[in-house]
Image (cartoon, rainbow, N blue to C red):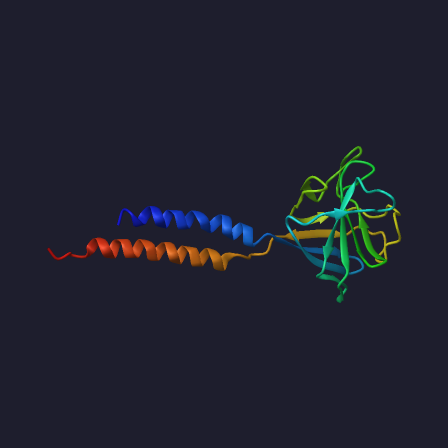
Length: 191
């Protein structure tokens, strides 16, 4: 029995990291409440960053392909999301496009003079996307010509409840390992 308990703890110690690693996708929803525009897409939390070239700037942003882009109920297979660094000339925030259509161009929330909130951590070449709930973005900068206008959108970026199946499977395995240990310890062995 005592040999099986460390095995069970080893299996349990794998459950949380595996659960977290398997669930690392972020579901984005941008909503403009007055006009009821809604944009949704999903991206990996640690995306493959591509070089961004937004109006001649390439050192303030990175691009990520968004194959699940849906704008007001219409799906776009060629979606791109550009994420920007703060401070100036980057304003944090993001730009959502599909082909030559720019849907939104939003700055991150204003934190102070020349300081806007970024929607990622890390570098432009190795970013990690962050999750948010009801984050008020800032529109109205006149950069590009967003189809959905210059009004501010509310951003929800959430990690889905994924990976729990693996957690339960590992917990069941740990339970079985413990159970076999107790069962074996209770057996009487013939002499």
